[in-house]
Structure formats: structure tokens, C-alpha cells
Image 1 (tube, rainbow, N blue to C red):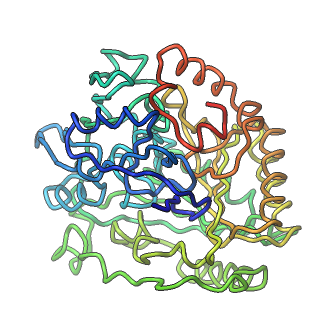
Image 2 (image 1 turned 180 degrees about the horizontal axis):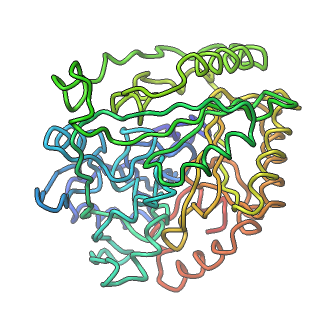
Length: 440
């Protein structure tokens, strides 16, 4: 069947199986190296193998929950949204969440996803107590920070290339409500946005929408949004009737591909200007439902169709603290000069590294979406070089076109990761289109 990631680029004909038991999963090894696939929300080709893609959708059971510690034991194919549906009404919420709830727990571990709280709490791997992983020999190994630690550390952020994650134990966060107390701060330029982040190091959540087409003294103008879980006693009376938030609204949908000309420098510039003006009007403190704060795009099903039939690419890098200001300025200047704007541009503050091959480092991460075109591919090569020059690296969960040379030049850990796979035999059992493209 034809497969792609969420970016719908690249598209490949892949042989897909969907085993229902560990024994059947082990049998899939007879078809050669495989890659596990969750809900297909990685943006590129990291969960695609033309000869042997294994869907984990049947490994979707919630197994056990400790209501005193918040430890949840679940299979890898469980959707994050199902965890929220089951446990938020009981006063528990994911301790780390990416920008969509339509991801599987196994995919979250493989990418060591991060959220708006990475600067304080780190990535998803920090919430994992143990993993059960099927290796290239078909045997299942339990690993944790105390047991089989090498396998555990390489698996967190290892993009499914150390084995198939079958089940795990994770820790949820206790919350009193489902509302987020949000503080929105318009920032007239990049320097002001970074100052807002630096002035709020203890904010539980922080993120900024950033205008990537503004120039001059307005380069990098942003809306910085700080947030915290609202306590019950602070909720306005009208919200106390629904302490865990209103049910998510009816999802809208994009039923067809928009024409390729719909997103251009003029429409994106107009959208960005309007969004910034709206941010100015809505500045200050407000109570926001959890679904709106953490997953704004989940309310639009099929939003990836707005980029047209060719799909879209995301560029996401992280730059270390000491070069972030100069690097971000160079990235935004280059984007603005080419006019290849993105209206989904996000800036976040990052904390310490997680797993051995996890994406984050202390600094800032910038993520931008672009419709696929030859000009965009040329632009992204320029952005790659700027990232390299400023000591940054790239997020493989969002990658669909990076070269092996650029990956290994920006991230020396890639060579160690590839060597580990050869030494353990993981390279004979697990491979993706991305791993082959990147020499992993």
C-alpha cells in the first residue's frame, strides 16, 4: 500500500502487516529488516520500510494504572488521546505531550517527543519507567534506568531502530483541572521574544508563535504564551461546573487538497499580520481548555491537506544557548528574504538532553512548515548550513529530506548510534527509509 508520513512527502509503496500478537510480530522478521509504525504522525519516512512495515495498531491495550503514583502500563499502540480520555476525568494528565494527541505511546518514546515544558521537565523519556522491547532475535527484553540501561538509553529517541517497543510504564501528572491559565505576551521582535522566555524560566509551559516573514526591526515578532495547570480554587465560577474542561468541539475537516497557489508569500504574510494583531488584542491572562492549549491543530482533521497534493516539509532544528540568538536571526532573515514563509512557525526553550540519541539540547528550537517545492528544498539546504554553522542539530521525527552528510556533520552521535546498531545486530533487524537515507 502507499504510505507517507504526516507531511505526505515522500510517498512509497510499502508492504504492511498488522500482527495481533507478539508471536506474529516476531514472525514478521522473516521478511527482512522491519520498522514499526504507530499512527503515522512522524512527518517524513521514519516509520516507512518498503519491504516490511509493521503496523502496531492492534497493540492498543491499557494494562494497569496505579492511582496513587500515576504509573500507567500500556501497549505501544495506545493513542495519547485515549490516555487523556481515560485518565483526565480522574485527575491525571500526560507529564510530557507533543503538539498532537493522535500519536502512539511507542512513537512518542521512539522520537523522545518534547512539549512546551522541556525546559523544566525534559522529554517524554523522562516519564518512562521501563520498556519491553523485541530485539532482532525475536526475544523481548525489559529495560529501564536500572536494567539493561544501554538499550533503554539508545531506544529513547532511537526512532524505532533498536527494536520494537511492545509495552511500557509511564508516569502521568496529577492535575486538579483541565484548564490552563495562559499568559500571552506579544513580542515586537526576536530579541523581545527571547527575553520573555528568559524572564520566565519557571513557567511550567512556554511556547511562541513566530512571524517568519517580518523584517527589519520587527524580525521575529512573536506571541509568547506561558501556561500552567489551573488549580480548582482559582477557576472562575463558570468553569467550575466543567473542571476538566468542556468536551473537545466538533472537529472541522479539510476535505480535499487545496490548490498549490493557495499558500504563497502574500497569503502567508497576510495571515501572519492578522494573527499578530489578534495576539495584541488578546494579550494578558485567560483560561484556556487543555485541548485548545496543547493541541490547537487537532481540531482540524486533515489539516495537512492545506499544503496541496505535493505535501509539506517541516524544518526543525535546535540551537545551543550560546549561538541561538545569532542562529535564529540568520534563519529568520534567510526565510524572509526568500519569501518562502510558514504560518506554522513555533519557537520553544529547551532543557538538557535526554536519551543518547534524543533531539533536544539546552537552547532554542525553531519549527516551520513549508509546502513542497523546488524553491523550498533549496531554502532548506540553506537553513541546514546555517544550523551547522551555529552548532545546531535536527529533529528526525520531522525530517523527510536531510542528507547523511549533514546529519553526521551536525550530530557526531549519529556515528556512535550506527556503530551500536552494527555491534548489537539491530541493523539486521530494523531499518526504515530514513535510516537508509541517513546512513544509520
